Amino acid sequence: MATADILAVVMVAAVCALLMIGYPVAFTLAGVALAFAGLGSLFGAMDLSLLGALPQRIFGVMTNEVLLAIPLFIFMGVMLERSRIAEDLLEAMGRMFGSWRGGLAISVTLVGVLLAAAKGVVGATTVTMALITLPTMLRHGYDPRLAAGTVAATATLAQIMPPATVLVLLGDQLNTAYQAAQLSQGNFAPDTVSVSDLFAGALLPALMLVGLYLLFQIGVAIVSPDACPPIPPQPDAPRGFAQAVHLAEAMAAPILLIVVVLGSILGGLATATEAAALGAFGSLLLTARKVNAARSWSAALAAGAIIAALLLRSALDPRLGRTSSGIMDHVGIALAVILIAAVAVGAVLAIDTVRRAGVLRPALLSTTQITSMIFTILIGATLFSLVFRGLHGDDMVARALADLPGGAAGAILVVMAAMFLLGFVMDAFEIIFVVVPIVAPALLKLPSVNPVWLGILMAMNLQTSYMHPPLGATLFYLRGAAPPEITTLHIYVGIIPFVLIQIAALFLLWFVPEIATWLPRVLYGG
Image (cartoon, rainbow, N blue to C red; front, side, top):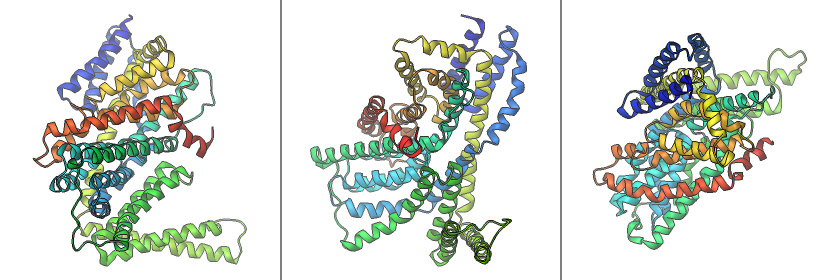
């Protein structure tokens, strides 16, 4: 083995060792990379002039329009979390299904699906779900293991349920790797894989997981009814049609927001970044309406003006500067200006409402912290991958994967196993930034490897490692937010059936790739 190969292997091992000790990820990646760049230069295995490409790479990260969706989706999730929409949803769902055995667990799962689609961040979803649902489930006699397992498994849906931030980052990295793989094979007009492709590919696998979770909960209700008793009806609770209306009112706003965001992406009406901006703005309006009903007209004004502007745009072209235009065009342009002004007024009033309620500053602070963490890791991982390539580690990985028995299937299985094990010591973001740029180009060179299928397989694998005992990150989030009646043993035992369901779903996705590739093919062709 050449000196460069040895240094590349030792560099990866050093990063894993330091992460297990507890050093910060971003600085570990950058520090180890710089140290091994120096060693590579000392032993003549690497040219330090390669580091001159780092500023340009960082500039490319900062100007990447796709990654702009990250802070917008995070802001959307944080605003919805602080608007207390989740509490209303759980109350309405609990009243609708709570009279059934296992009905509260089903309600928690359905609410978790909506929160996962709205938040897109596992940690925030887990804490929110634990604080809201676990005390309620325990108070009504639910088995602590079933309650903890349900919350933990449902919260991890934020890893794969569009518009998950993991899918945005994975889509960006896979696109770069896919193009690099094609260029290395002599294709100088490479195809691309977009975030929209991954969103479409993840939708059916995510819904399949939800269906499997619900089937398990129904099975528990049948086999062990004492583990999930029905909730006694409240005397003052609405019933019948009034109950259905109450549920519809609670679900209308978040479902409408999710449908608008995902629908605009899947329908090709907006890019992921544009849809994220729409979602962030919509969450701001929903929060303003929620925290101050007296000023809810400001949110209604902005939302109504946006809808009217879209309808106007579908009827005529209100752009300025066109060479030919009639009287109706002038009227349309004037009306468009008025509608834009109404949107601006409504937005300013909504922002002021949220600020007065004490929600805006914490939401912005939380968004900034999470976004800064992600991009700091990304910059450290950029330096790490640059040095790894400088030591020809990417060539070594490509040779190793190509030489594995079983061809493409064997190579993918090894990578999936490695990512699963790395999930014990690294966050999903870190694995995406560090591992995917190294292994994805080599995998995508292999015959018959669909990039969307590979991306969804990776996302579901990372989701599984998030909830796997003993080191799954979701379990630690849950342990920190759970009431004292829930012990660590309850969490570990309760999550095992859901981990088995997750592994079964991975096998289904492995043997039936159309679960991930059918919808993107129908929507976008190819």
